[in-house]
Length: 461
Image (cartoon, rainbow, N blue to C red):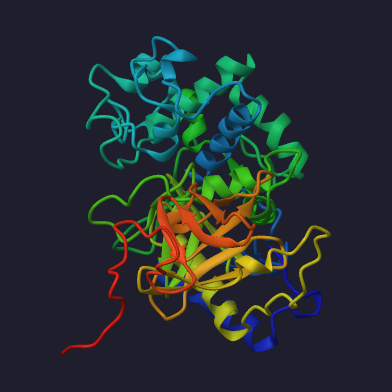
């Protein structure tokens, strides 16, 4: 995330709107307490809380249980294993964790919830029952672990992340939480994130749906299911984690690897208004704004973390009630309040700074058939191809050492763009995944597939 430092602090009117939003959420959601934070420019720029206890309010140091936001932490550990060359995301699980009962599913499918596994464990509600009922993966998966053929559709699966946690333990030779602390929590400075609660922490409560009374919820240790939802954390720690998910940190994962996590890997589940799932991250949209993050819940707690890369914003909302507060919606609203009231300043324009020869001969207008396209050189050395009009495909390309360009985004991601030259060294045309781009529509001097009518362009008559 990046922003101009002098523009980070929200204006008084914006701060009031943020306070009002969480006040409404705590009141209407009937939450014993609620705490929130907004991140901009890589740091917390606003914090707020509401509570039912007179004269006391939680702050960014108070732990709440974060439920399935834990899955994102587990996904980070798996991506680290991939980046170290210890596994490939296309590997079947059985290659590294044989005998689990789901040997044929791939690691990528588990990360993206497309492995076809059941949403929950068999037997008692695992979030409110002892982990001793599920001492092995066989008890976690049950006799019939699959609900769909692997790879066919998105189907959210808590047991799937138990498998990923067990995979981490198998390859590291240490307990999941120990690996998480050493490889993620400590490097990122997330000292208030833990598997078991550490004071100060909120208690989890169930609020009666039809009466203003409540009772405490049990706080079970999830055992093998821990990688799917065990963690306790704070808004301060999750704010730091959101910055990491936006920027990366070479001590944990590179910017390229966290960008890969944020990219769509599975479509949304039918009937749900979301954009699908990445690798350990949920994708959504609110008010036309693309959001990446995760929600979480366990008995007594609900949590939401969203970030908008385009707006350089993230928000975290935590509450200690089993239901009632739509923390994900509230977090999205906090982002929207700041983004709408105080839009992000664009980065200053800067000229191209590379020492290498600037490929100006590639810039300008090209034609794919009759569709006009414009190729621009950006200051970071990338090429951007987009329609000359309002409609069409847009993509960015990275320069390669052999003089070609590799697509980074959109329809042409992974495809090769090359300039085809004539005998005298001038550029004849561009070849992009077999598509020919010419300087004139159907340029008769270029090898247009299918040829060009020798009579040329003409009118009716």
